[in-house]
Length: 535
Image 1 (cartoon, rainbow, N blue to C red):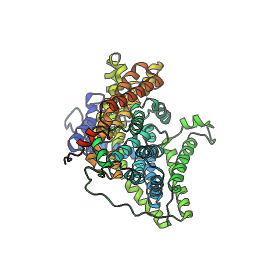
Image 2 (cartoon, rainbow, N blue to C red; image 1 turned 180 degrees about the horizontal axis):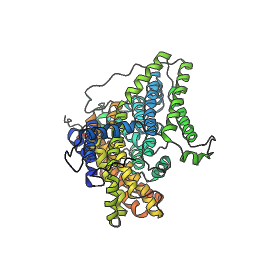
Image 3 (spheres, helix red, strand yellow; image 1 turned 90 degrees about the vertical axis):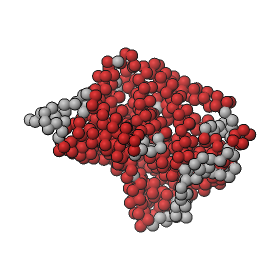
């Protein structure tokens, strides 16, 4: 029997070089795909090194990158299940947009929402409703709510922020979502990924506090930073302040679409996904007949969500054909459109998985585990806050939350065990995983190369740099409150107490900002907003 190959750099500091290369390349190139690929190639070269000449093995490096990397990831059934689910989601989005359901909902909302506060809350509410996937969210909310917010003279920058801040934060706390499927796939063998995801929800401070911050700012009519000028200009008739290079024309959609053509498919998709997940968990009999909770906890997220999305597509096809809003030919054309829309996330996820594989083969998790264990007593309680900052930086550099999950979650779970006999350590493991997820979303929000940030700009038809610059102060404010909350959580290790403190801190922050900053209606800000914009 051939002995398992162990690289000479296994479990050394060099195991951290591949993700470090990816981060540096992202900072230099401002591009995700090449950065992740350079990190993978670096990992392949380090993996193939040997102690005697010739030291570098080109063929071995090539095999590590493709055979043991990309191909190995794409032959994993769970990983392929996530990719198929993404394609199905793209098809569903394309069907709903072409049928006119999104546009019909937007018209309905325009007729029923009559205030700026109401328009913002409606945008947040729709974003919260579409929690299946952040791409699904961005592709739908922008086209639906643009006419509503335009009528109430809400700036495109504010609309882009509302879209962006309800996309990833909502998906990262929704158990039935593509994000849940991706995160659960990083759980260690023998651990139920969905159950781990659910346990992280009350500790996901950035996501929860972002939603709270949006609602509070809408209700109290608070704007600060560059966003304040955009909102004043919008009230004076200029929705853009800085116009995007091209304002695309409205998509040619079917006029027969009704609100029901958006609402029913979303409800059906959620129901089918839940049924699919509990089916894979043994709820409907089989070898292990489980109750609902245990079936959900023991489900296979990639497979269950794929089942749900498939039957969701069948439901939508039948609904649209019976109602006559789309022809069969138009329905079939959405298959290609939906696949094209999901090419980018598929590439990012595949490269992120492969980079994670490279770091695993080099023993990065064992190196980090030993390093942290040496200083465990000194940094244990502040580890969640540290991980949150690391995740923010990594996600900002690469522009991808999912890539950040792939790098940090496996390492984190090798520092602390979810099944540790010490309940404090087991809870700390959950908090640290949640800090990975929260930091990844935060960095993704701040990053100008993030797919979600770019798609939010496109969905709102807002200048991309204007969106990034106006959103950054809001994201950093919430990040600061989240960081303090993670510091507290590391010591108290109680979800209810730490989250309550985080909510109090966020509410207090909003009230202080309301007191010390001029509102969009103040005379001083009105005067300042008349100054010409730069760029």
